[in-house]
Every structure is written in structure tokens, then in C-alpha cells.
Length: 387
Ligand code: GDP
Image (cartoon, rainbow, N blue to C red; front, side):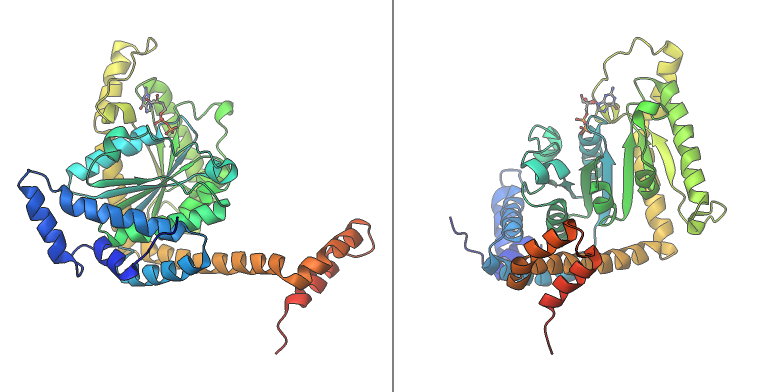
């Protein structure tokens, strides 16, 4: 089925107050009578869905339209705060994002949730895309949850997520949450497209079972020890263990994270209970004594508030010292180079001269007749455009 994409109309419907503002207002007024403001939202949501379908399309004529769409939306994108969240399956990401999303919406924010799911790119299935996740948030008019595209490699999925992020920002979503599973390269992808990267951990973080990959830990601006209600003492132990590892990492090779400098954000660790934050009673834990239950109550009652306060401190500090702007500039440059490199690689592989010469070159390399570096150079030369 071929979709018809009118990019100008799409942009108008995405951007609030665009040329179709009159229509949107009419929608709004018509719907206000029912006590609902769904009209504007529905129209915009449809446009967002259509825009993302266009961005995800692999047809070359769609790519040109998608490029026009992105360029038109560009001046309106970039205004949201971009929050990356990662953690192993079961750590409580969706429970936490649902609680956080509802908390932010209650404060007047509009929240988009996007996923970078490495499992969906490998198998077409998805760890994160399960429709039953975030039930309350997903039906809220001020929220939009968009699962990963289910095809393409991780780089492709990450690229679509970045582009979709621009659509949501242009549509006035002021908090964009990008979620990923704590496996593989997806954390790096997500931290390279967000302003603040949150790593979620379980209270048994100190155990050998939950080996925290140093590389991932170094990406974290904020670590959340979730499920603090289950064993508050373990959560507190994990919090201080993780904090000392963060400090250790901070002291090695990160002079800009030296913790005597108050004008720079220091990665920190919080504990909370996403389940309590969302207003659900966690299952009673026999191990928790009355005293520790009371301590847990104290620790987690304001868990979400403390989390958002930390995010705001990060944002204020990193805006004042210029790190936030620098991070975005660096991300934009890296994104462009990443796309250039990916494009060069696929063009190289598809080049007829390379396809013709590759099998023999590979044979020669494997048989030890040709050095790998020489073969690479010879193949590359086949694609060089003679001036
Ligand atoms: P995800 O795979 O990381 O998205 O994890 P989910 O949000 O689906 O949570 C996995 C399980 O942990 C669910 O059964 C949740 O109800 C439960 N859970 C999440 N957060 C908490 C918490 O703070 N405390 C407790 N006790 N359970 C939690």
C-alpha cells in the first residue's frame, strides 16, 4: 500500500500553531463542548504517526520527502530535554518511565517516550516494544510512546529514533525519554543522543552477579537504584558502592569530572521505588522489618521528586557552564560523521567493481597470499572517483 505524504500539511499538523491553526482551533472548540481537548491532539497524533512512517520508510522517493520534512521541522526541534534511560530487563524501566511520565504531565509537561531496542533490530521481535507496558501513560493525551522500528541494524534503529525525536520536539513535547535495554551497544547509542543518561540498577548491584560494565557506568550521569522497597538496606549499600565506583571512574581520565569543581555536574546515585512512585503497593517483603520498612518509606516517598530535582540541577548547572550546549554540538557532529561512514560503507559494499573483486581478494587474504591491509587498499581504490 502506497502512502501519500503531503509534507507541508504534515509539518503544519505537527507544529502547534502552524498554518492549520484555524482548523486546530475549530477542532479544539468542537471538542471542548464535550469537556475534552482531544481534537487538536488527535489531529497532531495522526500527523506524528504519519511523519514517523515516512521517516522509517526505506523507499528512496520517501527518503527525499523525509529529508524535506526534517529540514522543515529543524528550526522547531531541539527544545526538549532529552533523557536516556537504560537498565537490564526487569530492573523496572517501564514502571519508572510510566511513573515519571505521569509525574511530569501533572506538572504541565508533554512527554514522548522512544525506544532503541537492540533485540528488535536483530530478530524483529522486541524486548521493549511490548504493548502492555506503560498502560496509563500510553493512553494519556499528553504522552506519546513510540516503540523501536522493528527492522534494520542498531545504527538504523538509532537513526530513526533520533529523527523521530525531532518530530516530537517540533510537536511541542518538552521531555523526550529514550529507553534502551542494558545490553550491547545500545547504551552508547542512547547516551549519544540524550542530554542526560540514567542507568537503572537493582539493589544487589554490589553482587558479582550484576557485574556493572565499566564502559556503561562511565556513560551514566545519574544512577538510579530501583526497587529500594524490597530491601532498603541493600539499596543503601548499593547506592554507596556505586557512588564510590563513580568517583573512582571520575578521578581517572575525567579531569572535567574532578569532584572539587562545584560548577560541573558530578554523576550521582539515587534510590527509589518506581512501583511506589506509581502508586502501587509493592508486594510485602518478609525480609523487611518494620524499622527498615519505615526507612524505606522515608527514602522512597519522595523518590521521584528527588530524581526530577537532580535532573533539574543537572540541567541548570550544565546549561550555565556550557556543557549541555557542547554535548549537543558534539552529538550533532558525531551523528553526521556516523551517517557519512555508514553511507560510505554501504556504497562501498554495493559498488559493482568491489562486488566483482571482493571474493578473489578475500580468498587471497585467507590463503595468506595477500596482506589484509593491501587488499583493503586495492578494493578502496576501485571506488575512488578519478578527477
Ligand atoms: P523493565 O523490563 O526494566 O521495563 O521492568 P518493568 O518495569 O517491566 O518491571 C519488572 C517487574 O519489576 C514488574 O513486575 C514490576 O512491577 C516490578 N517493579 C518495578 N519497579 C519496582 C519497584 O520499585 N519495586 C518492586 N518491588 N517491584 C518493582
